[in-house]
Image (cartoon, rainbow, N blue to C red; front, side):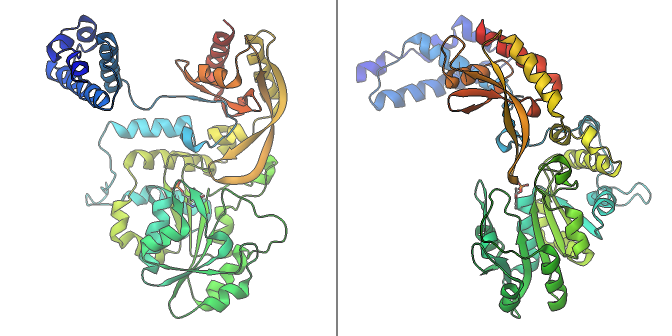
Length: 455
Ligand SMILES: *Cc1c(COP(=O)(O)O)cnc(C)c1O
């Protein structure tokens, strides 16, 4: 083993490698030395674990990868051909031109973020977004934070610490990626009181669980699953009425937070923010980057008295929204006020896309493959914790068994290795590409990527 260690090249030899020197132009010499040392340390660990020493060329290649990793931005654009419109792993909602422009304008300059231009005094970053949200939802007041998870944590911490919150047993859910209602509740210091059963909860269940320690009644939208069969749940109107009657705040974690009627697009009904406010709930909480189609944000709308309590809580500062996303969110909300969301907000353009148009685009892609692919019927999903089980009919490019006898897995990998990675879906060893979730301006890139599969 000691001899294996001795086969490793010296630091001096590696830093004078011509290829590495070329690659590291623009970086100080000490940085290259440091990367070389890190790689040699890693090789020594591997040898100690019983591996043979790699060749000098292999070590140089590994160091080259370390140099390139520093230089290439971690995040890369990808093309979402999965047909899942709000794909959480692919960054949820792409933004409108106007939202991107607003973010671009604000990012390189100073702004009146927390400065009142009239008085010359300190201001609040919330004042720019509040009129838009109140107009859209009918709420008295609003607060925008980092994301919905932090909004829920803030609301529970500010209103229910050391008190009880009543939730239906069927709604004490896990949204994914370790956001579980019972855990968030514990973190906030609130005690979760589960009522009803997994499939059935009635108003009398909430009513019977109210004590002097009850801080809130809470609804949580079961964003990512359906309960079917013998079920009963309490409507938001009923819950709001009970809250009013017993003088207890009602919190509504809407998850996606939709402003448009999804049934108009052939989808299942997704609870709308306006409905919750009209029903008389105290606070509605939802994401900026799910069905709102804006940047990541947690949006809280409702009664001014409660919003003020949230604003004053120390966590509010810890979870505050940054200026760039605030600018993008304002531009996104304006699309709804102007009634132009389905023509300007990309996710709504995708949801509203006519099937003929999808078919036309899928056929254009099929041409690039020269007869080895078919266009078939399929379904697009909304994703991102909204509209579980509800799909939109679509047309898919289907590549199966071919070309050149490559497996769907191998083809999917090849598409991911494209300079603009294309992410497809696989079903029963057939590779499927859905034009619905592909931005129209990216169609040409997909065509090129498909050509490279057959060439
Ligand atoms: C998605 C979701 C959250 C978390 O929202 P983020 O904006 O992703 O933090 C919380 N509650 C529900 C019901 C959700 O669907």
